Image (tube, rainbow, N blue to C red; front, side, top):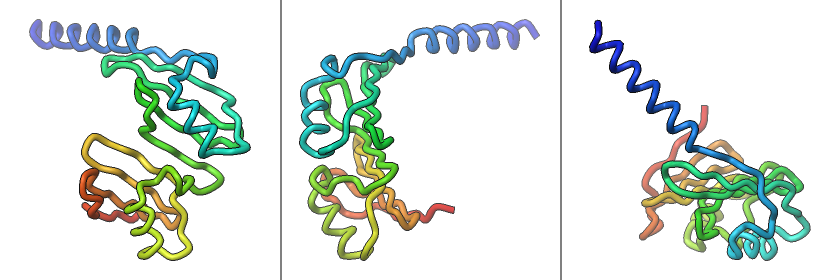
Length: 149
């Protein structure tokens, strides 16, 4: 019983310390890394950044912006995009790797890419028809396809 209580206490302390370290705070657009500001300016024309946040946690620093139409973009600490989630329109083809854009156009006619996420080893693309396609980051070959329920 004492071991269980001690483990529970240790777990609680770990959770509290992690939650205290994870911080989201609103920042000024000028405080975003230059590549992040440039991506929005060059690929999301006519959309303004209405909210910029800096997140600090155990994994480091990341940024998230919300655009005037509700689109959200997450950036790494250097300003490279990690996730683009378009709520009202397609992800601009200009930011999608060419091989992925060609594959989607060829295999899913008249379907938009609503969201793209760049992971350590792969890209995940969510399509407007409810299909998720996972691509190898190096070869752009399809790893798997899933259909949302």
